[in-house]
Length: 306
Length: 259
Image 1 (spheres, rainbow over the protein chains, first blue to last red):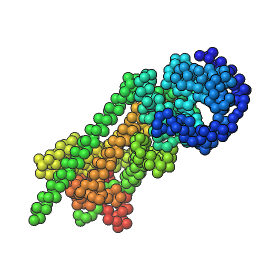
Image 2: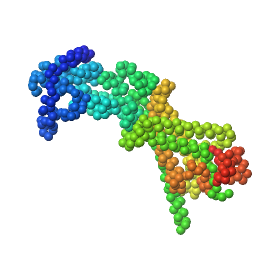
Image 3: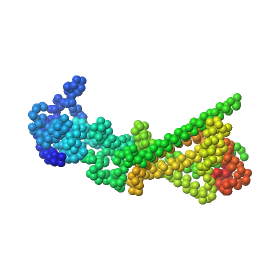
C-alpha cells in the first residue's frame, strides 16, 4: 500500500505541474450542461445538470470544468480523450473503477490538488479498505465531502464537514445498520456518542464539544485499538480537558453500560431504576389514598350539615 | 390564649435555607433536565432560553454552588444549635414514624376512625427532609465528579465517571419527580392546604392548626406553657427571636420549637 501511495504522491506532484494544458472556458461546457437534460430513465432529470450559480458559490467555484474533468480537449466526449491525462491520476481512477464499479478521472481528480490529504487517506482504515482490501462501500473523497459541484468550505454550516455536522456525516455509514452488519463495524459508536455529554450538548446546539474527528482525525482515521490511535489520545482530550491523562482518555471508549467491563455502571443504572420506580410508586399511592380520604371526609361533613 | 395565636414553626434561618434550596433546585432542574433529554425537541427550546448549552452549564454550576451553600448553612446552623444546647432531634426518624405510617394507611383505608397523633413532624415531612439529605449527598458528590473529571480519575478508577453520570442523571429525575409530584401535593395541591402552606414565608402556624395537625407537639407546647415557660426537655425558654418578636408586639407568641 505504501508503495502505491508513494507512487500517487509523486505522480500527483507531476500532475499539478502539468495541469490541464488547454483550459476550456466553463461557458462552453455549460452550453449543454446548464439545463436539465433528458435522462435515460423517463421522468428523471439527467445527471449532467449543473447549476452555474451553485457552482460559482461552491468552494471550487473558481476552477474550470476541466480541472477535474480532464481529457475533454479534443471536442466533446470523444473516446480516447484520456490519452492526455496524467498517468498517476489515471491509475487512481482505474483503481476506483476496479474496486467500486465506478470511477473515472473526475472522481479521482481530487488527488491532483489535495495530494497530502490523499496520502493521509490512503494510510487510513478507509483508504486501506478501499484500495487494499477492495471494500466497495469504503468511503472515498465525495462520500464524506458531498457532491462536488456544490461543495462548500468547511466553515459553512451547509458543508458536510462543518464541525457540528461531522457526527451526522460519519453516521451515514457508522449509524447505517446495513453497512454495520455487512462489515461488522462497532454498533455502539453512534449510540454511545449520542448518550455522552459531548453528543447531548452537540444536539442542543453547542459547538464547543468533541465530535468524531476531534479524537479520530479526518483523513487519517486509524484503528482505535492501534497504538497510533491510543498514544496521542490523551493529548487530544487535553485540548479541552486540561491535564488529561492516558487513564482519563480511556473513559470515553464507546463502551455501553451493558458490557461486562462496565458492569458496575450497569448495576448503578439498575439500582436507580428500581429506587425511582419504587419510591415514586409509593408516593403516588400515598397521594391517592390521602386524596380519597379527604374527599370522603368532605362528603361526610356535607351529609352532617344536611 | 387564642386559637388564632401564632406559633413559630420555622425560624428565619430555616426559611432562608429553604428559599436558597428551592430556587437553586428549580434552576438546576431547568438547566439539567433538558440535557438529560437532549433528544427531545423541547429540550433545545429550553436550552435556547438559557442562551445555549454553554450558558446553561454555567448557570447550572452557579446554582449548584448556591445549593451547596444552603446545605453548609443548614449544617453549620444545626451545629451551632447543638453547641448552644438548643438542638432537639425532632427530625430524627423513630419507630413511631413506622407505626404512624401503618396507622395512617389504616385510616386512609377506613380501618381506623382517626389518623395517628403526630408530633412536631409527620413521617412524610421527615421523609421529605431525609430524601433531600440523601439527594444532595448524591447530587453534589456526582456533580463534582462530572465538573472535575480530569481531577477525579487522578484519584479514582475511570468507572467513577460512569457511575457519577448515571447517579447524577437518575437521582435528578427521582428528585424532580418527588418534589413536583409529592412535595407539591403535600404543600400546595392537597385540598386542605390549597393554594399553599404559607409557613415557608411566615414561619408560623396558628395554635388551631398545630392542634389539628401536630397534636402531640401542641400538647408539649401547652405543658411547657403550664410549667411557666420551662421547657420539659431542658431547653432554654424563648428563643431570642421569639422574644424580640413579642417585644415588637408581633403576633408570634409561644416559644420557637427547636429542630
